[in-house]
Length: 371
Image 1: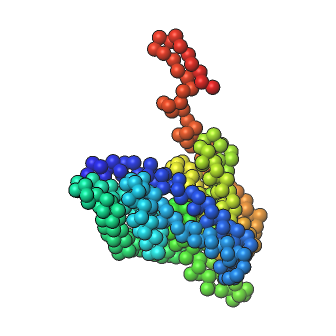
Image 2: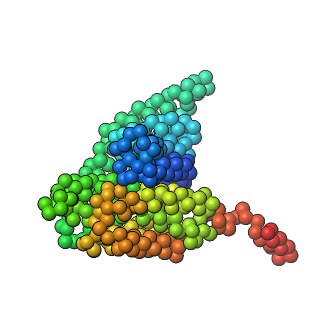
Image 3: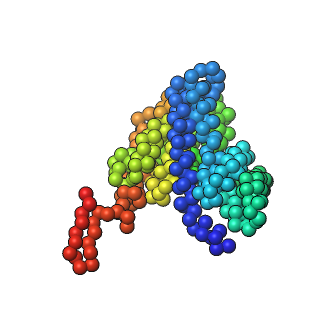
């Protein structure tokens, strides 16, 4: 039991290990999705055979691997190589069953803990290879997939449905409160199941047409823009934070910030995941910035959009582009300011006990400055 508690105590370390492997998947997948939108417009998946369709589908393949990759390498961090196979499989089950990225993280810890404990079982030496290559991966995969499919996914999907019903029942007059709630929940999981659940609300209202214009009602357009605001702000907060205060971030995070800029422009919210998961202050800045942006969009009733996408492509269908850009800029500025003011330097930029920057003996006779 103490070993399990130790693993859970080091949960952040294991998640960050998984994120380090996840970064290339998020970056490549997100960039391909952005290129798909750039070449194919706001619905590139509807035009097979085009460059936009090719890039967008390629990107979706990459982003759909996220639960499997994070599950595999969280498990690898806990239990070494024996956790990779079951993690990949159960992570994909999480993706296909609706549990998504959060399900992938849960899968990673389940696989890692189970595989770690099974490796501790004492068995005959002649049976050890069979135990680690076949028995552990097979048992963990079967049990984990069953639980994910029949227990975990159901809970997450039920929460998603509840979230959708909750937002659908909010009174339209409480727009400022609506902006706070949408901004919080829309950025809480950085583009994953909660964010997608919010998108289902304006989608459901999209079929209600204004008889005077033949277009979706202004309420539906307004809500669509509020939800779309949650998509671009988090990665742009991450990007501008790394540009303004680069010394607060390590080299890997600064590179992720460059990718987050491109991903944020095309509203690929997952671009914020590597930086937000690595530091709770960055995560909080993403949420704060998104809330500010959503509240500002929500309090102006004449703002809306006909484009079911965020970021740059969304501008094509907006009712008031300058005012929307001003609201988004205020949200990005608020989140970036929070990160720049309160974030502590990442470990490899801070002085550690291993850094031979200055060494002084007890008698004070020797000073060795290593420049």
